[in-house]
Length: 152
Image: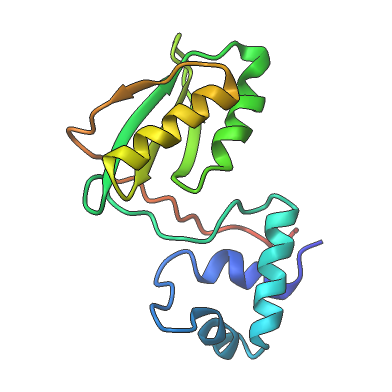
């Protein structure tokens, strides 16, 4: 069951996250709770897999190196491989597509060398090759969604 604090964290801070030295304290002050309560609530949301991370989405190739990556994964392995990929902080999300290359993601790292090491590690851990594609045109997809949490 989601608390009012969970609901506010899920809805109110998808955009305009406070860019201050202690953002969670700023959020706590806005919501009238303690910083520890905010951190605990976010940990609960992660533990329950309602969120996977808190962090920025940086446009490709603006900071460091970015790459579009596709993988051909058997349907029976898709969830396992997607879960592995999701644990890498260099990947902000992955998604399924209807194609032989059915698992796609964008990876971002501080350098091209670090990015290559991450993708090599993903290949070793999943057992599947990556198709590494340059990001020529980027498309911004607003991943912030107003959630209807009245029934949660």
